[in-house]
Length: 159
Image 1 (cartoon, rainbow, N blue to C red):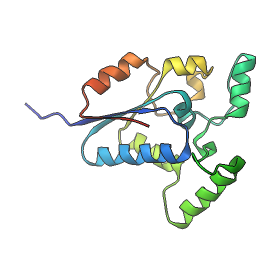
Image 2: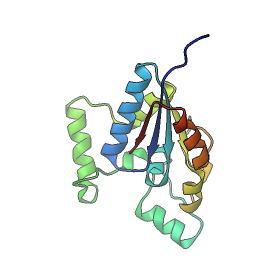
Image 3: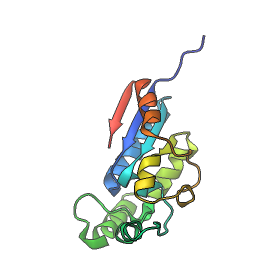
């Protein structure tokens, strides 16, 4: 009988640039070591896998989207955001040091077989529809699916 790969399950709760970058680097690193990886994107983490477009049906949903638009290129760092200036500064610094941009890190993860799974409940609360999310990810699921994945994992991370 063939030996199964070890598994990494990650709950991605943050939508901060640096935390998303760390999560994607860990995920692709784990795949490079022959681990199966599933990333469960929930609440603010959904911003990283959302298309750059406004969402929401209700006043609150539209307001949330206006104040906090999706798209991996719109993520601010967890510190020193400075109303978007920090994002610009970090992107410049990353480019200078030949660090792969977030958009490319995400696509690399998808191409390498990292399973990107959005949280249905968070999507409902934040009024984000399936068509508001990027291509190459799995269908939205509930927390029970993540718990089942995590229970089979050797490593579980919350970012």
